[in-house]
Image (cartoon, rainbow, N blue to C red; front, side):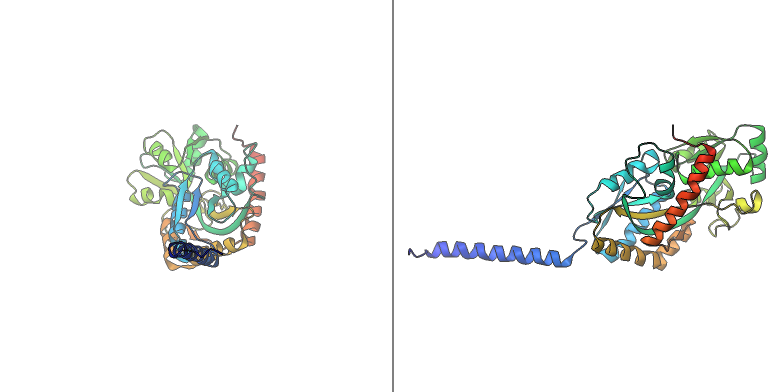
Length: 330
């Protein structure tokens, strides 16, 4: 047998060491498990709105527990359906998750025909992130200064109200208000508060309905926008001077918007457990709880199957309203 030369042996030795190093690196990566790279968090609404605020707060807080960065990707449109459809189609490996809402997970399926995803089957619930009341606001120059004023005005003229879009909890809150107050108003959908707020300030619409966090700064400033009611059962600590609908117009009225994290169906349990643990740690932290409270919201405390049960209860509630009011996106 021909002996290998010194140079050949050296080359083979280098190749063997490189192979061993590669195997060691691969083994270490496998041992490290999920997550081994950044996670993408799809937000199905524009930047600056309540969903976006909730997502970015959670992304920053969860990064500490995961040991990886979370990149927020805004994909707005169709009442949140475009973004959540992208989540449902993503590879089920834990590296793409989405911020679903009361609209995308409990309302839209009763409004939109031929939806690209099934909220009951295409996702793995992770965590309820936060809940918040909606707020009813007017321009400070408006003669509407209370819910009683709104009712009287709506009975004498056709009031218009802005919302972040068809199918949002805000839109449905408006429809619910019309039903219980016995009035008819013109719904004017916008692509997020970045567009609806200027319309209110500019006088293009009479009333603004929106999630409290995305309007809080304007309400506290008070120079251009006045809050006349919040939709939660109790007043919000963030705007304690703004009464509830229940105490001013409709007893027992209570509506809150909610936001939750989801992964595509089939995501491995290891990844789901890591994501859930990271969300749980974030939501139990004083930093996140204080941040949400400052926004006029409350940190969530439902995870996995408890969240699944909650969203089903919400579907039953809102599907009834959609049918009774004959609401559609067509």
